[in-house]
Image (cartoon, rainbow, N blue to C red; front, side, top):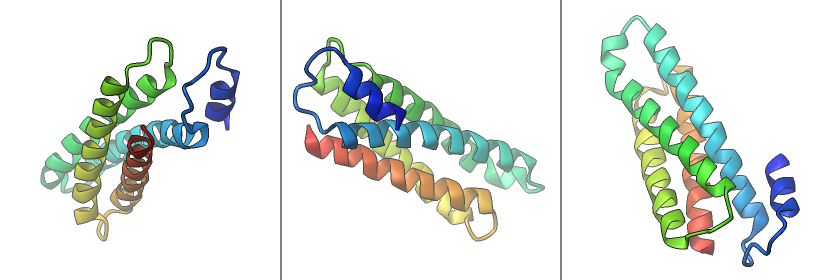
Length: 133
């Protein structure tokens, strides 16, 4: 996994972080951002698009928060544990909200089922890093 390789290649000590947990979270954040963006786009193609307005908004918010979290976790110079924890908490909250929203539509829309699963994985990955801080 490229994220693990980049953590291994970092020239300074990373302060004892669990590199695999950290790398898994980075990957989950970027995957979730992509899946949420695709889900919002798929929702826009549905005939009942007006009924999916909240889902679309939640998808896009989650995608933005996940991408930002992946970026923050990818930077280590000048690391701030308090900021990292806050970003991870925000990401976990966004993923929970999006996962819950998409789960409501999962039986009718396959893209929402896939998105709910990606959100659950990302939420769990963020919580695993929080627990390790």
